[in-house]
Image (tube, rainbow, N blue to C red):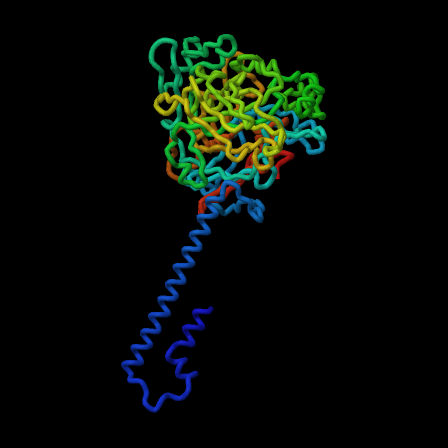
Length: 555
């Protein structure tokens, strides 16, 4: 409006109307035209300059928003509305539910029955899958997943549980975050590899690797016993991850081998008497008073899982049976997940591979290291190490002790595309901000996310031998939502479909720790609406709807 009034009041016509009577000797017509043209050119230059300034300011604001995106806090949240019947099915991205949790989709326990939602048992590992149906064009328009914007975030083990003990410090929940997706993965982007006891490694041949596994002729850990049975050198259909840096371009960058995360997850609760409430609470663990242990019965008549009663779910017997490579059994120790962008060669996992430095100057070697709970053959990018990793006092306080760095110092190998073997020695994560799992804002976080077609096969899903716990495995999206080879009426297909054809997709979220609802209760398949939302490109022609299981905690 300023420029409009300025231009109008400066036009030759307006000057004739508003200026005093002309001079007896008027300016020659040629000079008048010259001055008018000059004025117009100056004004147009000012307008152009102002437009450039506005463009620069807008670009700077956009850039600033993108760099601060990992912790977005929107002012308002859109209210979900049904997709109109006039919208074409190929324009809809349908969210079917979460997977890589437990072996079934539980009922929507009434909110008035608190013990009910304590009875769903899931694997608590570093992976959560979002199952989606969409065309390839539609899924390619999804740039990121926003987490924890609608509700408080998930907790590492060590959280308060549903009935926290007054006066005890528990781990804090994850903060809001935007997690960018890597481009659509194709079969050649996954790692399938195994190492026989004699002969060369087998690459990109899952069937042969499974046969060698069943015949027990693959290389294993030299520790013996259950450690050797779990830490077998086999990786099937595992993802490669890209580190996040706040932009979609970073998620599309080369997925190089690196340590992706390492930090104290929880303290004092590894190696307790898990059947003794007093011992667990005295160690700082939470206890779910809705379900006692052992012997409590769930609403469906089954025995309550101990993992949904206590945060000290790595009790002494669990460590022994979980295939951890230990120099000694943990005794009220802490858990520290260490994750990489490439899967780990299982037989190389040892406590001596790691060095942990604390704020008080101590340099420690873990007492134990192991894959559990990331034991499925298509996972294996994280290990958990146990030791005395500090306390629950806020960093900066006189008696506070926290982890300042985690470094690989020997033995550990990573396996990449085409069977590449890379030593992880020298990879390190430092903690310059003095982060602690008991300080607000320092909870667990998402490392990366990938998207790929859901496979109608269990190759790589689940574990084997004594570790094939039916409460946890198999738990893929094909098992939970795809009996008969279809999900929500859409056929599961390993290869690209026709242009514009609906397909089934798996968005795999990669976490820094095994997130739970509250440190005790497990995440359930119907809780996508509570914690997650999809982010589409600007001006995307597609719409999103949730068609998954209902849950008493859903919003």
